[in-house]
Length: 283
Image 1 (tube, rainbow, N blue to C red):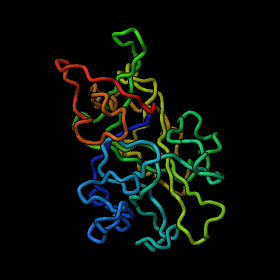
Image 2 (image 1 turned 45 degrees about the horizontal axis):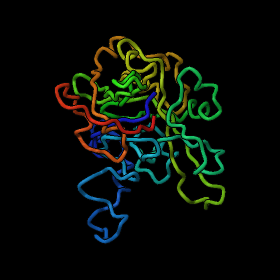
Image 3 (image 1 turned 135 degrees about the horizontal axis):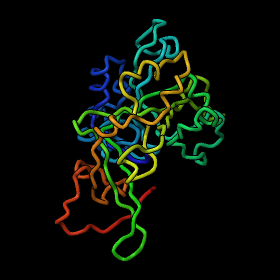
Image 4 (image 1 turned 180 degrees about the vertical axis):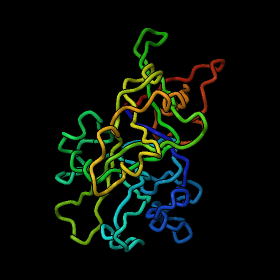
């Protein structure tokens, strides 16, 4: 599965790299315009706010995250692209897809993952699969390996998976929009997304039987095509060659708490150091 990940790229930089329209940065609050005494002000030294996607070493479900989509200009009348040709866009979305028929957001299921094997049949995902697919950029993801602790009790050891060469991963995702029934028709909808998972491949199976579906760049055009469904082959598990290029390292239990957020979460565990006490996990 994929229930936690890390991303260290600013939306504006990502948009520049991809030659995409940045729909995130223009809407981010300007710290200079905020009242220092305002508890809702955005800290200029961090981008970890749940309402502002950016650098985050411990991304959890319901966080606002960066995504990449390809949409026509007429799909977004307020967008920069007014032509009919689809363009890449970096968008902010809530991680945890909210189906359009949801009545109460507070009591809706937390759909942060969708299984590749059944995504075309599930009512919550099949419409998005046809024409609302996205990419979720990340440095890597966390997974917990089940085992037995020194005391004989079940334990979960966190690992961080990331490219050996330090490049970025782009995971296959789906997105949709939602509005409360009593919302004004002109009010912007809530955009939300989910990350598709598949069977783990190769040595990743030693950590967990599921993994996020990595989407290689040569498949982006077909995956992001807003006018056609994806070729079924794109939902297959990644190749062994791709997985061999992913590093797997044990990290400290600090990641178990969402409140912990910093580069130290990515540090490999020093086997010579004293064991840290385990903390609760969301997974």
